[in-house]
Length: 321
Image (cartoon, rainbow, N blue to C red; front, side, top):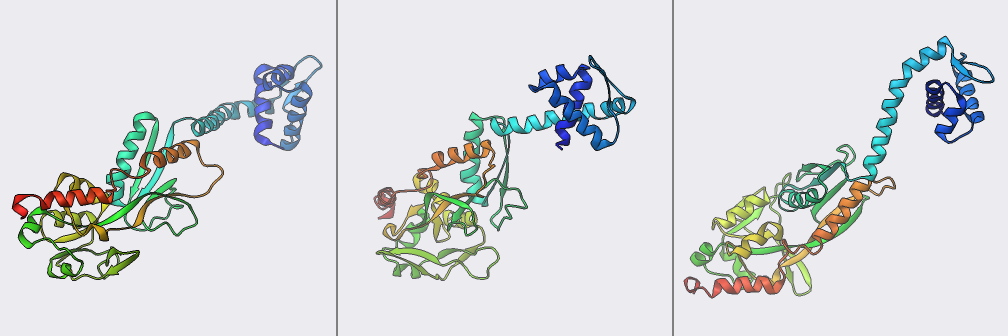
């Protein structure tokens, strides 16, 4: 027996004082209403209605049940309707996981653009560079910079992330501009130490058709990619900065791209989520928006001709001659 449906039918029959009217309200027959009530009575072991051929009235036990469950059933029905409506409409909560720098530079502006169109959607952003338990944290979708997620999830690469060798104009004016990878050994280099490891991350280069890695002798090492970028901005040395962090500073001239032909584009920004048939419509709509909005990553990816143009612009300055 469907207890919730039987109790709902009982409540309607009690409110209206008629099985016929309850049947009309529920779009069924009086016989179906009577059968449902009878099953509930058998289940509870009590009689709920006094019945005649023309009318019905509650017994003492029926009145007690009616008074006990009427408000609760209305609240439950409203709650269930609210959940169904929220799944169909543009309202509710979306929980997102992303790394710190990616979240601040890419995802927060993305969320702002989306909420301008869908103000009833709420967001909970978990920005953490460590591993995230998506099940325990009830994450709807995540963004991962670097390699594609290894977990069993649906993943889509949104754009390539470049690893760009760059330095401040002040550093290059003081120490000169390297023209080959070998010349990097004569320069101060800024490194990144991945949290939780004891070694700096090797630098990665594109050499002809291959991606190669080299361990550098770093003058300064940072455990945060944004700190690594700021050390480079302050003229402490040459850094290999990801394009999400570096793009805006290269375009304003605060950083100069170096050895552009060796820029690696192996990594990417990946959107991922668990495969599920009951995904809320609000999450699906946001995923579609994110894929379209971030496709190609024009704000965070510099085509090689643009990188060369920015490098040439620095070399053409009289002070750099």
